[in-house]
Length: 352
Ligand code: NAD
Image 1 (spheres, rainbow, N blue to C red):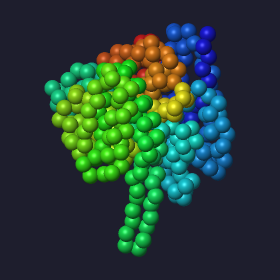
Image 2: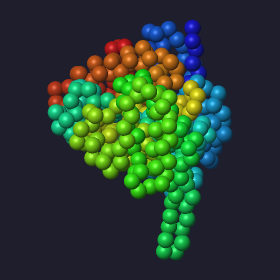
Image 3: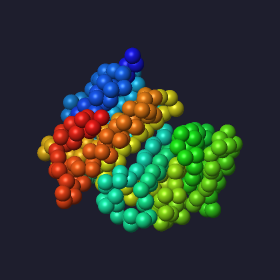
Image 4: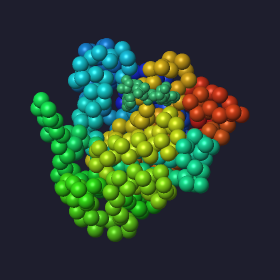
């Protein structure tokens, strides 16, 4: 029987509560689909600063590297807001992505039928089956390029190498092959030299994926098309900064922040799976956080790192079923059962 070693980075705020529910669901999936999971915990973010003085202790990096995959809750909170920039909880987050070589960020934007009314977009535009996967390059581009500051000027540089574009393009084409075989590459090739290299490289990689229908879109048009006709998209691949902005836009189409999962992948199997929301210090400890984004992140982990697609699908189906009648306060609607974080975890386990 397959055994997986998972490192848990519960983090701060609601992190521990939501990760506990995700672990419960993963254990249930293991029982049902005949595999086992062993867990190790490590510190990241504010809790790591309190215990060790730094947001990302070396021990945390070592434990993550020695595991099959990592589940992260969230980091940060007002307690650590006065830390210098390089010692803030969020610096731990950037640090762990770098240390594990996580260059591909996958952000699905999926509408769960019962939650359609939470979307700000009209019903007829989102339809019943909106399911977009945004693949964002995570370790290159303008966020990591040369920067400078003079008294009355400042600059940041967008630079991509062919190798960087090629590896993210391959992640996106591979994903498209497992989905509807449609890939949109987003750039600003009408203006930016780096985008022209991006486009040429994606076209070259596409020769290895003849079954995937590739199209190119300028980022400004893509921002508009996402709200005008989101159903036209299957997989979108784009640079770090464009992906940052477009994935937030796409996540709003799907409604509540408490529902949205993400994966950050390296070239190998190891991945880091986390909800897109933060540590929600305003509701931490009240037992009302929505654990579904973290539970859906576990489903992504089963699909992309642990090769257990049936278990992943079963969790997603269980979540959809539970949502028909039950809601945490952030997604509550009249006529539903209002449930706590822990009850939501239990209900997903039961539905599994
Ligand atoms: P946030 O996502 O933590 O919260 C925004 C709002 O959404 C809050 O009202 C919160 O209560 C609500 N919310 C978020 N997740 C929820 C959930 N699962 N269930 C119910 N409600 C939920 O964003 P913020 O308030 O801007 O940031 C709080 C802290 O989190 C900051 O320190 C920030 O730096 C950090 N942060 C961390 C990450 C991360 O760990 N990946 C991401 C974003 C923000």
